[in-house]
Image 1: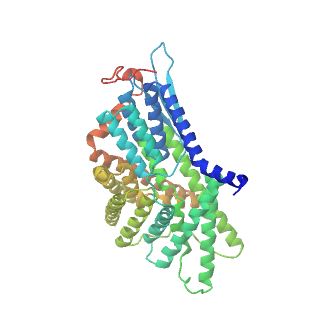
Image 2: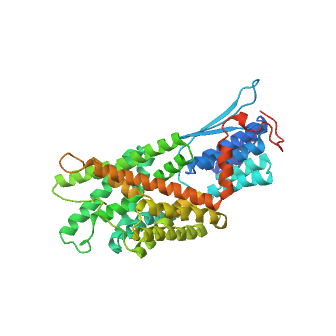
Image 3: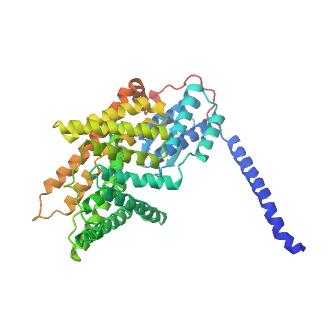
Length: 482
């Protein structure tokens, strides 16, 4: 082998060494940066990082503020003020009239929720608060949590994504063909949304395009059914659309928005409500446009979910458990928590069904079921090793009023002076908001029953916004100011 032939091989052999040298230099640089920051500023930075991670994964603003205050109260000699406004979190610390305040700001970009990561971060904060974990150890552990997040493989997450619409369809029908088609369509829909998101298409247009595709597929199935194609006869396009758009509906988003409003984060709640309106409007616009195009081509297809009724108790229980399990998989929930949350979901669906059967209004029935779910989530969170908020979200998702919200917007868009009453669509929208409010209020109240003292202490501490209302020198603080 000549010298020229050996040169490429030498370069390949040296690549691992080069990587190690670069990594060592990076670690040295990081260590140098650490020594230039005071422990107080490092504690504020850790608090901001924790708040950002939790908010991106959908944790409520009140819980994030409570968690962040645990860190600042442990490591900082002066109190800090935490404020969350929509997609912005700000941590500020006043250091007297002779020093400028320290302020850290993080912007929040929504990401897929990971209940494993949320649980590990919350466990870290508990160790900081209760066991006095040293600051350097806390920083190292947080970095390790974020670097080695426990996630499910992509194919399992896709199956979980498909189970959500399939479980929703099971709550309305026992026709296996409809359930299977809904499952397959939702898998394709998930890939479509991934491609659109990767190409930076705004979420509103993602919703409209995906809803249009689902409606066109349903229209095609209706045409095949009319022409007597084997296997397609008797299929309901409305049920297929109703199941498939579950992947797009912002039911949990409106639930979280109302919960933030209950916790008195009104600006954040209004921003989330507007987001829900835009996302659901995108679905409605996509459906309406596709229906209009189909009718112009001579195909009369109806995809309204207004006339669809829930199945019997067994169908709702099975469908609700499948839906909850699928949602739990997409949020990387541990197996024991998937089983436990699915059983809690079964209890919530059963309570709601029994109360509705006894002539109780859907709004009140949803509230009572939510109290049960919130209580069980708070009680079993430690045993299931999953955040109570994650368990409550999994258990409550079969009850969220996504379809009702969608129906109200479709009725509003189809309204004209000759074919309907606008009060009907407004009433449907009001019903959706009322159910979302009772679900959020019920889940919060149930959590209070499960953790009676923790909730009271949290609200009292979070309400102390002004530094002068907080102790100026907390005890057992060993770190100096920045």
